[in-house]
Image (cartoon, rainbow, N blue to C red; front, side, top):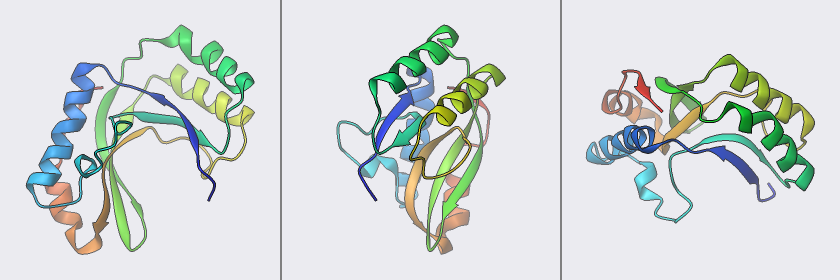
Length: 147
């Protein structure tokens, strides 16, 4: 798969703290956590698009569609599991309808998406063994929190 380039929504300090608490909870439970990824680019976020290439026209459209909606009031809500033999655990992020519509318009205007549609989420752990699913679910928060 080619290297992807992304446009992301970054939370405020309260949202970042909420996600990092889940990262720490997974680590404390001895499970894979996004804390294990120490690169400078690893920070809580919600990916809007991730495609092989983002053009200046894509960036302009993103600004046109999303900038008027900033700041976005969002909240961490439930959890989602993605994957096959190993799983990715994410916290779902509730966003206002107008944000979802804007993102879907941007996605429709860009190409190279791995998956159709958009499911706003913040990844908290990757490569979780299937037998550890319940422990991982028990470790992360289940309450709605501002993001």
